[in-house]
Image 1 (cartoon, rainbow, N blue to C red):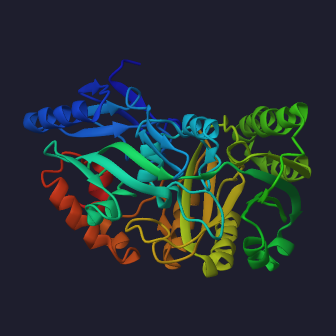
Image 2 (cartoon, one colour):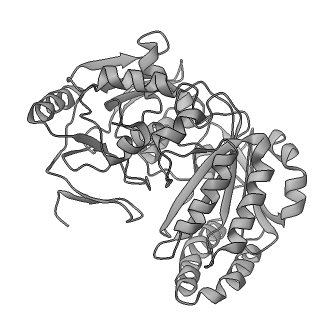
Length: 433
């Protein structure tokens, strides 16, 4: 692959850029954007490539953020950190730990860049916590005319409300200031349970834990639940062998082999998922928050995720099960269910409401479109909002009613990028030209 060629982690998005740039400062990004605009080209920043959509696809100039990935400042007293936008979350977590700090919440993958994570609304799970973008205190971005804009709740507030989840449509993020908390320990409790029992007590599970999620294994009545709660001491570390057995061998090596078998012989998949549902046994352990939240994901897949009003979760889940039952093919990947609190970010999936998320996956190389489209119909009918970094077929016309501040976002876009320097086929579909 030439340096101008690009593909995402899942391999379902590919692009050939006219050229690739590696700026190392905000000033270099500003100069680059001016040059590209004068040439009449488009420009897009690419992070780690962990989006399943074409949000980062660049046919003009692709901006790699690998040289824009350092720490700008850390203030443990105020619990604030400012980093360059290309810093991967896994590096950010280590930097924070070195200063006795942590992010209040994280997703289960830490390979994304800070810019990519907040721009698409990346989230973890927790009924009282919003997506990662709710931890943003200030942003620096470069607009289409090369101007450098610094925004916060007290400076350029309209840009701040739009750019915290900006889908790369407003400019190129170069610096991000994040609100942190003191480093903390989580007690993780993971165990298989009957699906009916978990659904019956869902509100209790969500409200009674700092972080709750579950994985449903298709064609079974079983789920794997995960409860993460803050505790004062790291007194029950996970033995190294058990960590390797569960998180590397079973969840990656064995699961990858099972997926390959299921892809070749689909009739075996219900039996495989039944074994999966029983293979992960109960375990309880403690660890630093970022180590408990994040786990390795080495098995390649494609994904769709929808946020729905939390009260609609049982109906959405029942609709999903009906979609799975009538598919002409089998689904081998578990379905993930998480929650988040309401926020005030214009294009956040949680804008104005407590959310529940249902994420559906399929192993690479296996059919997925009827599955994803079927669930999309269910979710959209319930007011669902698609994750901006995961596959969906929604357009500007049907997204506008789902976001009360959608037109306000478009107005900020018109101000910052009237010539659509930062547009690509994805932003054209979901935001219009």
